[in-house]
Image (cartoon, rainbow, N blue to C red; front, side, top):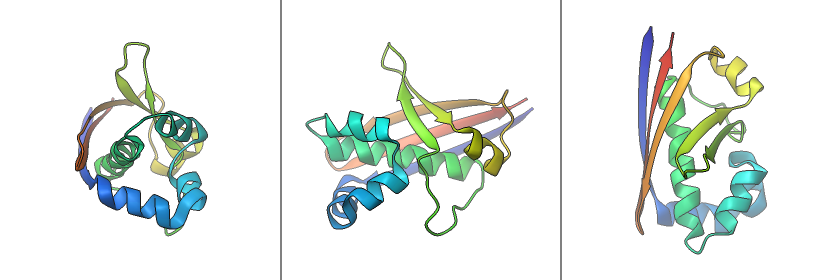
Length: 126
């Protein structure tokens, strides 16, 4: 068994600035349509975007992966169970690219407040 861990902290103001500067291109490259719909429906939408970006970065850190310039991160998606617990869903392409077996377990914890968003990820590979 192999256990990998990643953590990332994002300043909400930087995420807001990136979204306002780059708009739809940035959103489409980083966030899935479902993530955009969820975050866009929230009053504090930049906090929600920031924490999801932190989650994607934490996954990359856990996997010791570096995305290539212009590479989409929308294949790493933050979803929520009916209970509200967040989880990571990796697309088939992302699993192939990062060599993550189907039986790997990805655990996610998120927190955000007005200035910062943080995510930690633990990947357990049997």
